[in-house]
Length: 231
Image 1 (cartoon, rainbow, N blue to C red):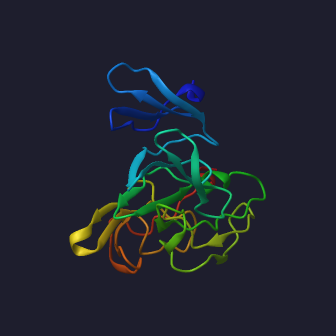
Image 2 (image 1 turned 135 degrees about the vertical axis):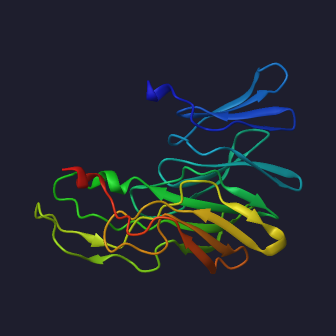
Image 3 (image 1 turned 60 degrees about the vertical axis):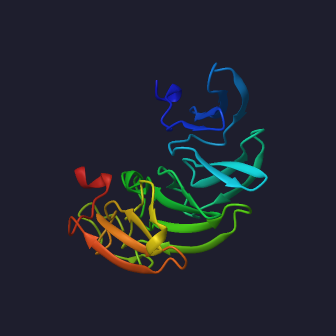
């Protein structure tokens, strides 16, 4: 059953194994497997668990299926802070946040393209993003959307459904960082609606300190798809 699946990559740190089930987070003894602590999670976790050492305190950070980033005290499992990474109701975090020098770098994806099959749903408005977060406080330092412009009303489909676009280009995987060159790399998915953008199905390079887009390389052009395209 998918309700029993464990889709999160475990993390080993300080003699502990940290892992996430469908609705829980665990800290196990790495030698024996005994449970040090277990806490309920607010939503399903697909991202891996990242360790963020912050001097006297170490945090365990992950993203969940409702687009929230959570930071737990790695010693106790108690929540230190949490952040809603995007206001869109279909937002989710599937890629493991990257940690460096007190900052977390988080990519945001969504399942809005699936919602397009719902009668009357106007697809689509979600835009993928990357953001830098202060690991100690959860404060967003910068946020860069992978689709530069907000969605506007588009053409009506053959079925008579209203549309909006551009949209999509979610960041499903973990960011890769190159601190020596102040550069962060992410990959993006498809657009959910037309018009297609140059930053979908692409590799994006962003400045780590500001989030400025340095360059992008598109692999597949004109890829605008949602689940209603089959019908």
